[in-house]
Structure formats: C-alpha cells, structure tokens
Amino acid sequence: MQSSPHHRTRRHLTLATAAVAALALTSCTQSDPVTGTPGSHGLRDPLFPKLGNGGYDVSHYALDLDYDPAAHHLKGTAEITAKATQGLSAFNLDLAGLTADSATVEGERAAVNQAGSELTLRPRHDLRAGETFKAVVRYSGTPRPVTNTDGAREGWLRSADGKLSVAVGQPSGSMAWFPGNNHPSDKATYDIKVTVPQGRTAISNGELRNPPTTANGRTTFDWRMREPMASYLAMLSIGTFNVWEGKATAEFGADGETPKRTVPVYAAAEESVDAKSLALRKQIPELMDWAVTYFGPYPFDSIGSVVTRGRGDVGYALESQTKPVYAGVTDGEGASLDEAQLHEIAHQWFGNSVSPKDWRDMWLNEGFATYAEWMWDEDEGGDTAQEAFVAAFEDDDNWEFPPAAPPTAKQVSKAPVYEGGAMVLHKVRQAIGDDAFFELLEDWPAAHRGKNASTADFTAFVQKRTDADLSAVWETWLYGGERPATPNG
Image (cartoon, rainbow, N blue to C red):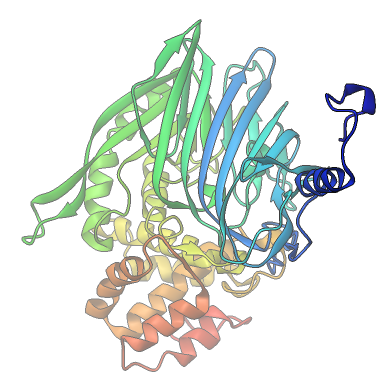
C-alpha cells in the first residue's frame, strides 16, 4: 500500500513524478486483467462425478511429508507441476480432512478457498492455455479415513494403538493425505519424501532415491515413482516393518528363458505378521516369472508388497503401484496371500500401467487380473480356465449388471466387474483362438504403457487385430444385461 506523507523522504513531488509513482504502485499491487475462466470442480465421471478437476493436466507431484504418530498430525508440502489446458483464472484440487495453510502459483501467493473436499486456488495472474506452471500447497492436520458410497473405508487408515498407518486410495482416498487431481485419467510421476520418528519406516511407491537419513531423532525416507501413476494407486505405510529384498525377472531375452532385465523386490511386512508372511513374500519372483511370460516386459523399475495387520485393524488389499498392500496373510476376503499376490501383480500391467479413462472401465483392471488367476490355476494343475469360466457363468452374482456398465458407484467393485470381466476375456479367447489371445495379452499393455484406455479403446484394439466377428461377444457378454441360455451363447 502507499506510504503516508510523514514517512516520505521527499515531501514535495512534482505532479508528473507523483503520477508516475502512482501508476507504478498500481501495476505492482493489482492482478492482470482476467483472461481465463475457473477450471471445473469434478470431471463428471459417470460414477464419481465430483472426483478430479478440469482445466489442467498434472505431470508431477513432489510431496514432502512429516508425520507424528503420537499426536496423529501430518504436515505436508505438495509441489504440483501441471499444464493449463485452458485459460485459468482459478483451479481446484481435491483435499479432504486437512487444512491448506497457504499456497503459491508460479512463486506468487495465491488466494485459497476450501469447502468440503474442494480446494480452490486463485493465482495472482491468470494462467494461459498451454502454460506449464507450479503450484505449491502447504497443509496440515489430522489425516482421516474417507468413506466410499459403498461404505468401504480408504484414505488414511490408522491402527487402534496408533503404531501403524496405511494410506490407500481406490477410488478417492488419496485426497486424505495430499492435494491433487484425484481421477485416474490424470496420471503423473511422483516424488514422496516422508519424515517419521526414528525406528519407524515409511514405505511408498517406486524406489528409494537415497538411503534413509536420520537427524534429531527423526528419519526421512525419499521415494520416487518414475512411471506415470494414477492418484488412487499412490500408497503410504508408516510403522515398524521387516523387509525382505530380492530380485525378479522383468524381461526375458530372445530365448524366452534367460532374464534380460531384473528389478529389485522390496517386500515388507508389519513386524507382527512378518514370520507368517515371509515365505509368501519370497514367492514374488516366481509369480513375476510367470506374469512376464504371458504379459511381456514388466512396466516398472521395482516390485514388492506391504503386508499389514489383519482386516480387523488396518486391513486393506489394493494393487498400489509397485507395492500392493495386503491385509495380513489374506487379501481381506479370505483368500490366501499367494492367490492374492498373483492377482495384484497382474494389475501392474492391467490397471496400473494401463489405467482406466473413467471408473466405468474398471473391468479392464479386474477382468484381466481375475483371468490371470484362472490361467495360473490351470498352469498349476488346478481348474482349467474353461472350468473357471463355467463356474462363473453359473454364479448368479456375476449377472447383476454388465461388466462395462456398473449402474452406480456402489457397484464398481462388485462381482460382474471381476468374474464378469474375466468371462468377457474368455469369450474373446474362444473367438480369436489361443495364439491371437496370448499375443493380445502382451500387445494391449505394450501399446498403452503408462497411458489410459477405455472399453471402446479395447474393443477397437481387439477388432483391429482379428478377422473374427466379435459383435456378439460385446453385445452379450460385455454390455448385455441377461445371461445366455448356455455358456456357449
């Protein structure tokens, strides 16, 4: 603001000098004329219309977090690098249960407004369409769970004794621990730095950039996820963990047997379930060998797992990118961890590397991962894929709705998305033959690596690579609402 007369060093200014000074002061204290418009709050996803935000595309998140388990307090700084997809006078981020203390856009303080899970930033200067910008949000508070429309809890999950915290995000929980564009269509790379009390371990996606460092009784873990990741796949676990480390095949050579590339395995377990889960965690290289044989080169730079306590505490199973989370030695639904691990490892190709464009496309995640289980069982001498298909066909739960058309958000994780989706793939296999189908299992994730894909993208991709008429498969098994008279229908 302009200084008062008795603070001026010169009491007498000419009229011209005063006019110039006033003009300069105005240009420094007022924003440029408004040329943009606010980005939308919500991307109008058919199932979760309020998730995500419009007007920009994030390329990178750099998160710097400090967590005090005793006080259950989180302090964070999120630096978000994004490109404006329109002229922006304001834009939204998703943040739930935490308070944005301040924000800057391109180094200048931005106005902040917070209502529910919507955080609105208004830059001092409008952003031009196509402009790459950095927004920095400093926030703090007590992180809490997020409850889905189906009653499931995600977000920040904390054990009753406060010694273990797990942050998971499908479909909306990531907003419980960092602000972002919370929709799978906006994938980004991540740096996640976490400081916790000495003796605790903080585990997140990707690989450690540097060895953990300790100062003044607190240890910092610095993780990096180099490949694009959907926000719902971001994960953070804080507690006392034991870690088994090894190597796994990521790509075979020309002979199909000699490893051409390996990646590190980082398989952690909360200390109370370490002994019970160690043998199962050591199974990861074997499962990876099998998966790479069918799905082609592994799309990331590491693989691993985080085994938490049982479902009654912070139990949760999710295909978090590079480090799936498991509830104790089961997947949270009663299946043993070895069965669950194959499912979640398959997700690294189907769902993580190739992510859905919107939540209706969830069957492309779960159908492929479920079909991987059928294939594994067949290879291990169990039921054949055909026998698994017939059993799924006869299960009434799988016909509640079409796999590609969950009617509401409550149905996005129901049986038709999983086994119904797997049945679609089996019918594709029958229609195009084994050779073409197994090529498809490699070609689909390779062609869309690090990207998003829709159901329409998949059907077009399959149709382009075969002379078979698949219209009946799509109409009856993918979009149809009624069960055929026989499995051959």
